[in-house]
Image (cartoon, rainbow, N blue to C red; front, top):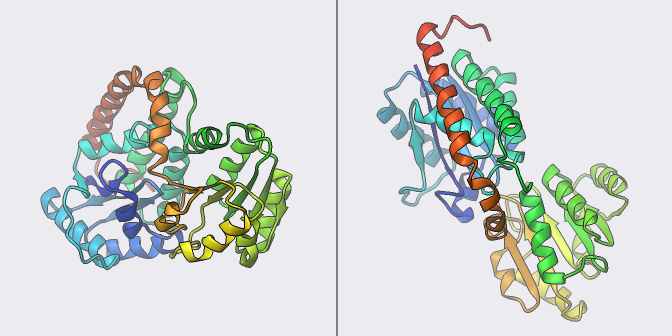
Length: 346
């Protein structure tokens, strides 16, 4: 029994492909059950974020056979009918564990050293564990990965010059508008990423915030927390006439905003510049919107360019972090060789 990982990320695939393989949160327990029922895995966890979709599994199959079967599972589950090449990667031990530790530590993130992925990975593990889809192998691997990530954060400078997708979005807004003092922000979706981005914009001087969400209660709660106002979800496009920055991060499975809907709004805005930051996967905003005059549309991949300016502050720490991870993986594998999968209780 060995731990393997198969998936795609911002390093291997564009957002247009990643969104095709994204798992809705409510669908993950069923997908994990299907994996285990098929015999592909005795334990499994699925990590699905805007930047990566990965299956971590303990499998009785030889790695080469397992990789082929997991690929078939992903393609069939998402009804993907096109050819796949190097976009999908597959790793066996020890590389799978090394990858898990790097992901937890932010070393494989779009923004090097960011900490948001730690929380996302922890949620993915906790969901799998809560539905009894993890066991001795994945429990040890994930718990050790979390410990290593905390160790790296406290003993290295990998987070120096703290940067996240949210702060990269703020940097982008300041480049377009120079000052944020006269500009209001619309948050579409009341999720954590949208909230953090709005808070970052407010901290840099944005005039105010408008929140819209399918749940009126959540919209009102977030608006109150941010000192802003809520608008009904069916009327959020009307708010685009007043705001100059909109952050969209819903879980919709289709475009919420397209060119036909935005074009008349831009005329009523008298062509004032509008910054649209689409951090949802699948995307909330049709890419064709970006062709409109005075509309600046950016997705999660576009934020990479802004983050690049900060990477030099952190790259010098990468080798140090890699050495820590290599040592911890070696220890974990030595322990695994001494204990059977049933030696450790869940």
